[in-house]
Image (cartoon, rainbow, N blue to C red; front, side, top):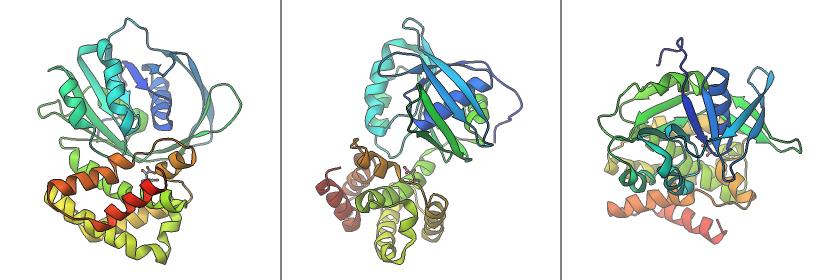
Amino acid sequence: MIDSHSSTHQDWLVVGQGAIGLLTACQLQQQGSSVRLWLRQPASLTVHFRALDGSSRHHRFEPWPASQPIQIAFIPVKAYDALSCIQQLQPLLAEDACLILSHNGLGTLETIQPLLKPKQHLWFLTTTHGAYIEPGNQAGRQLVHSGAGNSVLGAIQAGSDPRPSFAKALNLAIGPLLSVTDIKPYLWQKLLLNCLINPMTALHQVHNGELAKPHFTSELTQLLDEFCLLAERAGYPQDKAAAWQQLQQVITQTASNRSSMLQDRLAGRQTELEFITGFVLREAQRFDLLLPGHAQLYQLCQDAGF
Ligand code: KPL
């Protein structure tokens, strides 16, 4: 874990106005960092933030100044927006900028990495913190930090500093933060949860907790078996019993939540299906594996129009 006692003052860019991005932005600002937002339409934004202990406070964020080089950018945008987002930021990126991606699914890094200059470094952060934006008429955003979690940070390029200076600030914002030298096994563990929970809940339009019901057990078991087969071949072997236990734990802990894919479906937004089940099926093809459960689930999701 990162030492949480010393504070750092850095110029952060946080991209978008999703719950995890705004949570991080508020917490970074609270501990003294300068934070600006990158929104589709450059504008200032006020966030009414309700912390875990129920206390409230207001945060105001200005857009990134058009001429200032970007040194550290936290980019918690959907997987399908990650590439175009980096392309937009590119003209302003400092020669040695640090870019931290955070999204569900895999398959974005391969297209982003070739765009970066030799000293621009890419990181990935995965978090279990819960946050949501309350619908409301008030100007600005009503952000609720709904569940304490933890985060894991890892560099994508070999040879990156294993304890970058910005990790301290992230630890204070959405820690406890574990800094790892290889983030990929963590991303595969998260992929496992996402490729079982997200398409199933989005297809059946149920809260996460419904998946604990016995009539979902055999399908979830098949999906897990197939995933473990693939993960083994891809070099990220999973302990099936532990993975099943973790799945049940997440289903229970997030029982009353709608998965992000169900939320996207209900809001008529694009989903991350291509980067979750789509990625799994593309990987399976690479290893000549047939994953009939995932293939059928993918098809049903497509037929349902998401
Ligand atoms: O990450 C999630 C998501 O909804 O995207 C899970 C783990 C499934 C929790 O809802």
